[in-house]
Image (cartoon, rainbow over all chains, first blue to last red; front, side):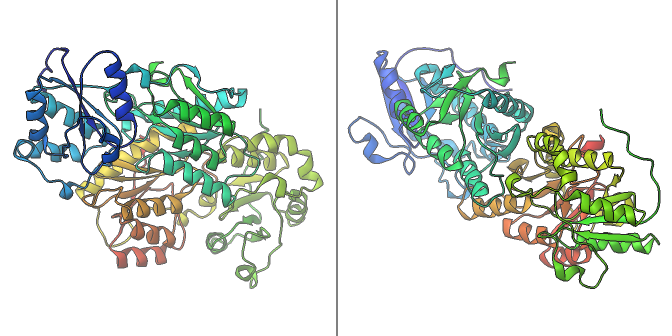
Length: 290
Length: 290
């Protein structure tokens, strides 16, 4: 039984910022709506130069007390966790007193998959009086809409591959594994698990170079969709310009992601890169809604 | 609608031999039962030195006419396809006349997954008057039995990982993808697709070396099982001594395979290697039978 989170209320929004440019994009979208944003970049994860020009407070993973005191002092009751975060080795984390008390339950969360870990973390934070929101709830602009993102259109052959990929992700949703597959010629070539999307795409490039994917396999699609039952506040699938680079190296035709459920980082750079490489990028109705 | 295969009948058995030592092991098991075996090693795949001491007829992929004439002349009506075979690039195959007539249907088979390709190939062969058997039907000795193969026992934690792995393979069976996953701490770390088991294990080793798998993840199991609906005559999952080497490099605790549905190559070498490395190898009731 988890405690009920406090009712939604306005006031400053705390952003706990992992790596990459997405936290700052979210901050700008929220600020543009007239809401004050407090930035809490994570030491060792967020890049200091990205935050040099903005007011911010450095925090550390598992030093939740530091964050909680600063946020409460500013009258802040809602927070968003956003940006890339490598799952840390348990023994590398230094816990403060607030966090230490929660240790047995954090350890329990560590035994599950990534989704389990994040949901458990959010529950612990909410018990401290904060409401945890998804970045897309405060900044829906970061979600991929339905339809093509660039100028390259999806072909008939690609549609069949996309449908198969969505079916596969739908079937494996309950397992808290990956959120992505590569499908070409109605054949699942790769399934993402612990390695992440970028490494999966490198694998396709290597299989192609070594002749393990037959030369006649043209096209092929990276398909991403959230897991069924996933806590949508975190870890929605995401794409960015580096995804297009991976697609080009893998020799694939395009990217299909669940519309309204996938985060896009640096969308204008992504579209530029996709158009230049003649790669399609499309938001499709997700298999998780069927 | 495929033609009914001819009824089972004795007489010499033709073995179409791919790479590795398994074809010769099957030949020995069949010979020990008193049945004559005709060896047809595949040029460019089987190693010439392995066949130097035995009567044999070299054949080529897609030169089915050559094989069919030699086999019929010897009064042979049954054949087994056994051994490793890299899926060839379509344009690299030189077809003879018999095979050329079947080309449109071979091309159609190439568009599906591996299982589809093999089943389609078998159907074409059966229409030429041959019955295609699985290697394990003529030599059940090559199948992994239920229970441990070596001296290392399966732990409680491993059993939970094995169950999760079997569940995952069961859920993805309809997709004609891989036959193997790596599970550790009830977390699916890797899913096999086009890359094959050995490369999947190398990925785990690399993820561990780069810190992407947390140091606290001890144990972990490679789980292999046939796909649901798979044509059991070919492409049953298989393990051999090189699988143990991959397990050691990946830092896993052991191997669990579907008992009675997984082929083991060089079992004595595999058990020696597993015992030496303190790796368990176990045949478990398959999820496909539940």
